[in-house]
Structures are given as structure tokens and as C-alpha cells.
Length: 318
Ligand SMILES: Nc1nc2c(c(=O)[nH]1)N[C@H]1C(S)=C(S)[C@@H](COP(=O)(O)O)O[C@H]1N2
Ligand SMILES: [Mo]
Image (cartoon, rainbow, N blue to C red; front, side):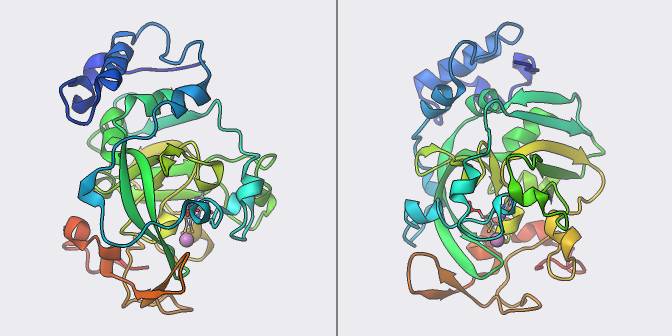
């Protein structure tokens, strides 16, 4: 296995602090062991990656992000999906089982102090996992409430150590049409790409998801790691990421490349800005017969509205 590690001193501060409230003793020791072994074997040497991941779950829920609406049942979260690599219907869960997630290399490159290639299992085991209940609002007009497990995207940015020229992070999904039949549909601009400004990526809400419902992430939900940016339409939350590129150029995302009149870079949720073909005023709550009003920034304005001060000339809501 090819693993490039940063030296221990370059680990995010939280990881190197065993007293930190986010860590139990076992986890803290594991992390310190990992840091100390920087030049020796990778953490996972000799053990199956699937076991090494499974033993991390479940983790405590971070109460800061919980709220009143009921969770969407697990069977719906894992069976009603958008993952065009496996087809354009919502029922791609079975087809997605063809995705090979071990080994899985994650590349961090571009405007960073040092380019990194990490094994996803090693990356996930280094990070401070927590559970967060987030709303998910698809641009198509449906929504869910999902208990994700993962770690702040800000910690990944810290690990990457972007240089002063970096203004955006561009994220890319795997590309392999032998596993993903949707990628044989040549009219789509594969691979799936998404992007955030560095300010967005380091906002406390931006989350790298590695699990759901207290278990490792199923393939159909974007294993082994995907993003969750809950104040934006669901398509911004890119699945099965293989590359994080720090850049000075605004990335053009998959849907934007396909249809930029309908899907822009910012894509912040706003009930008052209709999609060109339908209203965004309300949303269908998956798993119930309810329609509820959609909220500005999907209800997360207190966390993110300030990111857009001075950007009113941009198409912030599509
Ligand atoms: N790589 C990739 N990521 C993707 C998509 C996709 O088709 N491919 N669909 C997006 C859309 S439109 C939505 S609504 C969410 C759905 O996530 P879920 O299936 O876990 O609910 O994933 C997003 N991420
Ligand atoms: Mo979506």
C-alpha cells in the first residue's frame, strides 16, 4: 500500500491532543500511535480495511446540529438515491454494489504545501469522527433528515495545508465505467466534479461523510467518503471522492457543465428563487405525505449567511 503521511507535527491540532473531549481513550491512543509511526508501517498493516473501518462506528452525536424534524428511516436513506454513475433513477442501490471501495486512494493536490496520496481507511482513522443530523434538500424538490458520521472538512483542509494562492477546493468522483454503467452515457461530463470556496469548505458545517446511521457509508450513499454541505442543494454534496484539488480557479461542476442555466456554482437553497422549470418554495418530505416550506439556506442561515456578504451580484441561489 502506498501511503504518504505528514509528520506528526503537521497533524491537525485536535488530533494531537489526547485530552480533547471528542476522543475516547482508545481513539486517542490510536491517533498518537499513528502519528508516532509516521515513518513506519501504515496503521492498517495486516488487518482488513473493512474491519478497521467498521470498528470506528457508532460515534457520539454532536448535539449542536440536531433539531426537531424526525430522521428519515434508514431504509429510505439507503434505497432512494441520486448517483448518476449507476443510473438516472432513484433505485441504484443494487447497481452501486459493484463499486470497489478497497483499496481507495485519495489524492490531495494543487496549491498545497505538499501533495498527498492517502488510503481512505488511513485518512478516516486519523480524523475526529462525530455524528451530525443534517437536512438534505435535493434541487428536485424532496428532502431527508440524515444522521451522517464524518469529520469537518476544515480538518481535511488543515491536513492539505493550502498555499496562499488557493481559493477553491475542487472535488472529483472516481471514474471507471466497468463498475459504473452510468459513465458509459457519454453525454454526461464525467467524472462528477464539485467545488467550494475555501471559506465554504472551512465553514463549520462543511462535513466529510464516512458513515450513516452509525455504520460505514454504503456504496449507494457515496462510500468511502463524500461531502455534505447542507445549506446547498444536494448535488453539491459529491459522492465517492478520489481527489481534492486546491486551486485559484473556480471549478465548473458536473451539473453546471451540463446545464449552466439551471445549475450554478453556488446553489444555495432559497425558496424564493425558482428552478427554471419548477418552484423551490416547498419540498416533499421523503417517507411521509408531507410537503413543508423550504427554508433559506435550508435552515442554516445563522451559520452560513455571512459567507455571502458582498457577493450579491453572484447567482447565489441556483
Ligand atoms: N458522484 C455523485 N455525487 C452525487 C450525485 C451523483 O449523481 N454522483 N448526486 C447528487 C445529488 S443530486 C443528491 S440529491 C445527493 C444524494 O445523496 P444520497 O443518495 O446519499 O441521498 O448526492 C449528490 N452527489
Ligand atoms: Mo439532488
